Structure formats: structure tokens, C-alpha cells
Image 1 (tube, one colour):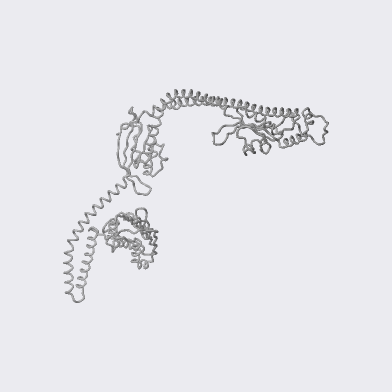
Image 2 (cartoon, helix red, strand yellow; image 1 turned 45 degrees about the vertical axis):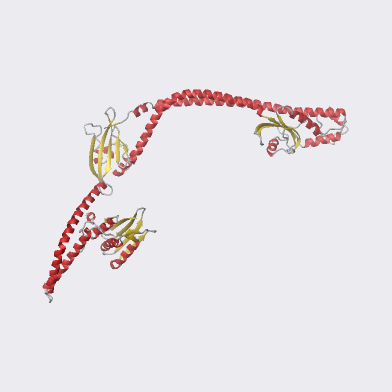
Length: 614
């Protein structure tokens, strides 16, 4: 008696709890992580904006400082009425003072083409800025709305990469003289700075120098060290780590409860895995299996059972046994009745689509749960058709072997008397020198004794063990030689011979004379079955293990009731046949480790298949 486990039932009842509790912890942790991410991003953006504003103000302040310093230097130069110092010298002095401020890497004055007009600081390029920086400063278009542009970049080189903050703005000198058109009256209204310049001895030179500068659209490029402003950002990272540790502690606390539920969840998963394994095992069993549930409905039917029943699994599943199974199998299911035996066995013959009945061995098992309530039934099915066929063949072989031994003994004992009878018949014939009835009778007696002696010789050849002289030979060559022996017969009956050969056929180690005898018997049988002509086809093929020789004729065929007896000794339907041809052929093929099979449809064809191992 089989008992179903009840653990699966308890797990199903707790399925809601097992599926819901872990999600609570996951959702809580997810919400905490989302809050932490939002808080971190908000603080980081705020700190980044404040740092950016501070750096922009510092850069613009440096530009204003350079302009103011250059302006005061020019005023001092004009006030002293000394020789005019070059604008580049005055600007360079102001930029060097600005570059001395902490956190300032470079201060450059560039034209619109990226050429350096003046510069101070660390690692100032000689003449031209690099392409990346040039692309950055060119985004500040002359006459555009943007007064300045900024970016954060990394310093490249052999040293460790450091982040840099760059700000670019147009060079707009405050109260500097602007080049005047030639048409403007020199006495027109000018500012105080312009009037001061106009009295300078080198006014024209100063004016030309300013015009040349403004035509090149100069702009400032200030590079500041961004590393000193990373401290607030690192502080934000520290806060993230602290909050993460808090969430980790909360997660650890929740994990204790989660691991408890996980153990139960694991039991459910293992049960599901075991069920999947059981399904695979049942489906791959060579024995047919059909099972019903407590309501008597078929819930399990593996492929082996469906194949034995000659139907599809879908046509059986979900039905009652009486509706989905043949009567012989449906009777094995007792339903919910507990008066029948728990185990039952029987054999049934089931008609198949091929017309031959299948012998099935059935075993029924009633399944009960722990409370001894009906839980279903299991039907095991074994196909005994091949086993029964082998049993019949074995019984037939044993019977034929016994008859062969007895016939061989009788034939051996008859040979000596036959020799004596033949000698007396020949002696008797010699006394009748003149033709007459007595002479003809003696001649008939001699011929019949010789015919009987030949039959006894064939019987002894069939009964004694075969002696094979094996040698490597081509089956194709044997077939062609055998066909040459029956060529006159095929031409006489008007029979068309078709020979089909597969490429790359290997040689076999066989007794060529014995196989030639087999093929000659088979070809002669086919020719004799087509007295009005027809087609005799020979196909020679091979597979991985065997060589297949198929001989097919379009003759009269063999009746179904005679087909099982064609290999029996002395069974023949021919008037002049001995009945040992096919029996001897089958014996020779079996001695080579092969087998021979005949299929036939009356008045259509007869096909003989000879299989020899490679």
C-alpha cells in the first residue's frame, strides 16, 4: 500500500505567508535605499552648485583684479609721462600677481584662434592651447548671450590625474581707449581716460596697439584647482556610508526573519524539484504508467503508455478510465470501491493499428493517504508482444531441433537399406536385356531410390552443424555472380531486373559459396512467382551496424496463413519443391550472425530482407 506525504498539503496552506513575508522586507529595504539615494543626490547637487558658484566668483574676481591692476599701471605710466610701456608687459605683471593666489593654476589671455597673448601660472603653454581647450573656449561666441562659460576637466600627464575647474570670459577692459574712426573729430567729446591718452606723446602708438588687441577678440581663461573643493563631496560620501551602515543593520535584523522563512520556502522548492524529477522519471520509463486522482480522473499518462495504446496523451488525460481507455484496461481501475484487492494483475490482448494484437501485462495498485482514504490508482503496463513472439520462436526452434535430430538419425539408418535396394534394382534391371515392362519398372525403382537418397542427403545437410569457410568478400560481387546464374531464366520469363547499390560498401567476412546459395534460392523463388513476367529489384544498402539486402518481386505473393510457416522444413506450396530451400537459407544467414524476414501481399509483391552484421 502506497501513502502520499502530507507535507505538500501543509506547504500549500502556508503558501501565502511564505510568498508575502519576504516581499515585506524587500519593499522596506528598497524604500530605504530610494530615500538614501534621493537624499544623497539632493545634497550632492546642492554642494556641487555651491562649489560651482564659488569657483565662478573666484574666477571672475581674478579677471576683474587683472583688469584693475592693468588699468592702474597704465594710469601710473601716463601720469609720469614716461616712455610707453608695452601693453603686454603691463598685462603680464597683473596676471602674475593673480596667479600667485592659492588654488590658481593658470591665467591666460587668448585670441579667438587659441593663441596665447599673455599668461601666468604653472605649466603655461608656449604659444597655443590644446585642441580640447580650444573647442571649449570657442563655444563662447562673440556677441553671444553668455558672458562666461565653465567646465570641470582632468589634468593629464605623468602625475596622478587631478580635477581642474576652467572659466572663460571675454576681455572687456574698463575705461580703456577704443580705436576711433578717422572721420571722428579729435575735438569731439571723450572720456577723461581718452583725454589723458590724447596728450601722451605716443598716443597714436597706444591707439594702434589697442585696436590690434580688440580685433583679435581676446578672452580670459582661468584654471583653478578643483581638488580643494572635493572635501564637501567626500563628506557627502561619508554620510552615505553611515546611512548605508544603518540600512545594513536594519537589513541584518530583517534577514534573521527572512532566513527562517527561507527554510520553509526551500522545502517548498525542493518539493517542486522532486516533483519535476518525478515527472521526468515517469515520462522516460520504458514501462507504461497511467494514474488517477481521488476523483478517478486520469492525471498521469507517460509516453510509453500512450505509444502502447496507439493514441496521444492529450486524448487520455483528464478523462475517466471508461471514457479514455480500452475496456480491458479500464476494468483494472476500481474507482473508490475498497472491496476489491489492492493489487491486481492480468494479461490482455489489445488490437493494434497494424492488425497484429499486442499482449500487455497489467498491474493495478490502489493508493491511499495517511488516513487510509482513497487517493487514486496506478496502472503499470508492460508490452509482452516481443517476449511472447520470442517464446514462440524458441519453442519452434526447440521443436525443429528435436525433429532434425530424429530425422537425421532416421535418414542415416535408411541410407544403408536404400543402397542395398538400389544395388538389387540395378542387378534386376541387368537381367532384362530387352525393353519391356519389367525393365521400365526396374528403371523407375532405381530413379526413385536415387531421388530418396538425394532428399536424405539434403536433410542431413540441414541437420548437421554448418562449416563456414569465411573470407573477406564483396557482397556486391556475390549478387552480380548470382544474377548471372539466373539471367537465362529472367530473359525466358520476360522479367526486368533492377539492381540498386549504395556507394562505399565495405567487404564482409563471410562464406561466399553459402551466401551465393542463399541468394540463388531467393532469386529463383522470385522468378518462379512471376510466370507472366514482372520486376525483380535488388537493393544493397548499409547502416551503422548492418548490411541490408532486399529482394522484391511483383509476383503472386504469399497468403497470410502461409507466411509464418515459410521457413519450416519440408513446407512448400510447389509441386516439385522439397521445402528445404528457405529453411536452409535462414540457417545459413543465422550462422553468419544475421537474420532474414519476409513480407508479402498476395497478388502484389513479396519482399525478402537479409541483414548481415558488418
